[in-house]
Length: 238
Image (cartoon, rainbow, N blue to C red; front, side, top):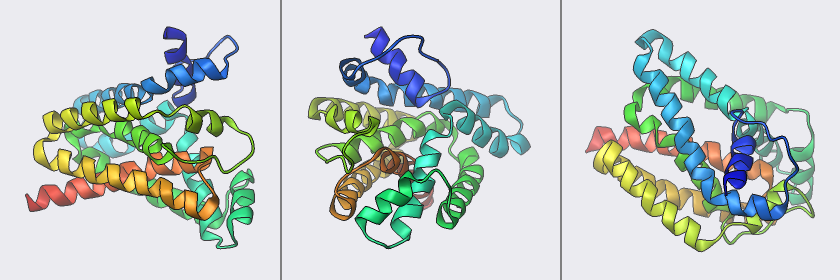
């Protein structure tokens, strides 16, 4: 299991680089650790937040998030925006998403996302611990009982490795953690985000034929943004 954990750590962060070959079995066994890896990232972000002066928090937290995550899901976020906003059908959207060049929609979307992170990360306080975990779990929810839109790719391993017991266990763990870190506001926002993530996956299934590695990245980042905005709004109302 340690090997499976380290594999996912290398895929979802820049904290570890594997020095051996891996296979689908090892990958599948490591799926359960993905939200845990998000919690590790969140703890690192919150520790930095705690010790940073106020005027450095926004920039430093965003820079640290990008460095620790390797920008992998940010790339998927921007590629997905290029594909779906081109409005040229599923086949063409998948082709655009596979193109290594970044288009106008992707650049604008990435810029707005990072501006939002810069503005809102410092306002989350202890909920920074939860954020990367719920984002990665959001990608899992989107892929659960979904299809893979391409013939081959690493995303296919991800989709095929998602099981209901893992989803259920992490849903409970994250809900308990959300209540502990942010009480009712965080718990309510988290569970509404779960709904967004799941039906976001259904949208991609209906419009693209399923998920890809890029759309998983999109759901990770957009689930985080959805939660941030919702949490801050609910916090004002309750």
